[in-house]
Length: 444
Image (cartoon, rainbow, N blue to C red):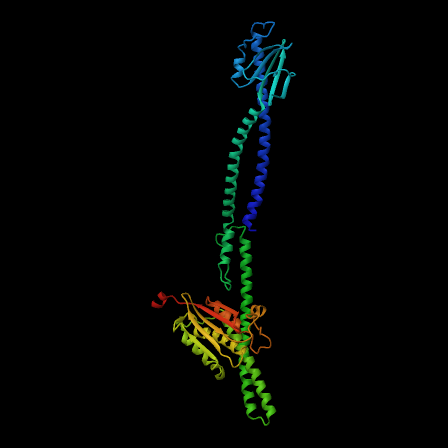
């Protein structure tokens, strides 16, 4: 869960709960006040009718069929009213009033008459009973209108507030997002400090910590590269001297056993020398060293360098199919040839001695591809995932275990791709791709 979403949930849920509880409290209070106000209206209407009756001549002994004038004031408010004598006779009632409306005790009452609920107030004084009432259904309709008029603006305001809150959180976290984006856009080997300009004071310690970590990481990597390069360079001269002395000793040896021992020793020195050369190449490729020569290499030049460095017995097994012509490759020829040669040497080492190794060169709109295929035993899933690890060799392989690591480092340095997979007909397929130079760049 992102920090933005987490803040939105915490603040938004808290905001919704608090305002929701406030709105429920407000609605309950409005309902109570509304009911009290309507009840007070009923009581006021009953008192008004009673006072008007008190100012009129005394009522006859028997109920009159003609409604007195005071009921006209009550009907204007939509209130039902019934006037009775205390002994039971009806003096008058408004049109639409239910039968028996005033047959209740004094004060407020809620009752059902003919299937409808009524809320009434009865005032009994001076031998008269004045009852005013209104329907509960009408009260509920009025309350619903009030609730609707209150809730809709509240919901609109809450949704608008949450939207403003989301925009505010997004704007407030924009500096943090810019730091994240700056780190995400970096290349894996970019260890320059993160710019601290424009960063809020709350984020300054975080940026400083990141820059400190990047600095320590860069120093550690530089120490490792220097050690690898220096160690490989310092060991080259002693190994060359040992190799020379072994050759001289083999020429002066007097028996076959001594010659065989010297041959084995020379092979061991050659293997160690090859490993050191690979380490030195890897350190240079991954380090800040420049290989740029100013000119792009060509496909024929790359394949020619590869073939020139192969032993004579291996050259006859390599089949090169160049379908891309002499297109330029934006990689120094020495590095492109090193990557391709390592793939070819691996294919020669792990395929039968009587089977060829094919190198297919092709070009697409964006890439130039070098695909190397062999007819060996292939690699399983675990071996494929470990193949680019340093010093890893399949089984009892005799290589240095650095070849594919160097291939991956060269490809990554120049924005290419490296793929390794099994062939359906058996063997291994390895491909390196380098970006193709645009035609406009060539014309310039």
